[in-house]
Amino acid sequence: MPSRTKFYKKPWFTMGMLPICVGLVAAAIVLKFDPDLGESFGNKLYSSSKEIHSYSYAVARSSSSVVNIYVSRLNKDYTGISKDTGQITSSASGVIMSSDGYIITNYHVIPSLNEPNRAVWAQTVNGNLLQAFIVGFDRRTDIALLKIKAKNLTPININPRYQPKVGDVVLAIGNPNNLGMTVTHGIISATARTGSGLLTREMMNIREGLQDLIQTDAPINSGNSGGALVNSNGDLVGINTASFNQYHSGTYGISFAIPTKLVVRVMKEIIQHGRVIRGYLGISDENDELIADNSIKGVLIRFIDPNGPAAQSNIKVGDIVKKVDDKPINNVRELIDIISNTTPGTVLTLTLERNGKTILSPVTLAEDRPNVD
Image (cartoon, rainbow, N blue to C red):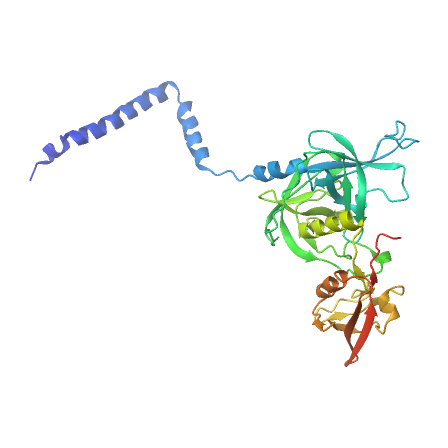
């Protein structure tokens, strides 16, 4: 057996140890003259091994599709902004939906029809300020469609395969308090937040209509209305519409967005018809003085619009809607979908439960006209 002395004198061992020894001696000499160099080198090694979590890619991919929306007074001949009263009366946000200038914002952002002396303006990410014309709007979903004369715009990214899920990271992009493009961060807190959607138009509020809202804790402040809610890939999740802290002091982290699928559907309807055409029944399962009973299978009628189709039929307050044309109804969401997707003028047969008895009531749907005061 070879001796231990002969083993350590082998060439491969000597050649392997020599560079290590030289390196250690060199490092000791450098650190003697510059002690801070070791700390700096260690920090670089540490920082290079840490992963930086950033949503800059999502912001860069979507922010150029978000515009500032302004409402201002026009001059006396309606040809431009008034020099005397041309100050901005309100500011909000919008989202570019097509390269040729279609922009989505909220209905509550645009001026009403009895304010012809006001104009809407859109400011793109490069600073261009263009007058935006109102193509149409839908109060029921709080959506307005605008059009600017521009080409080669960058539309927001839409992924038709994306399904919003509770817990998904989302970013709200908009123009809060006219500060310019601002990004806030949060998660999806809930989906399918909605009211009955079958109420009389005089009872509109955040819980009514067909919003089917996405709830998020991403801060949506005044001016964020109409802006984009995007996921971590920069795809449009929805259009920011409201936040509870605007109405209820001391309530934070409860904001809402209109889901992308609904936005696209409403936009196409407005482009094609100038409005959204949907059926109207004129009932509600809600009553401000009563607690909702979620144990009922079906829809308990607690209010009937006296001017709606239901009032002209055999439907009564206290009835439970069990079926519509033999389609079982388990909750108000299912009833909303059937009614709103049925052409006005169609006769539907409602199966009702009244005092333990089954009653059939035909009813002719009217057209839902929430845009008509």
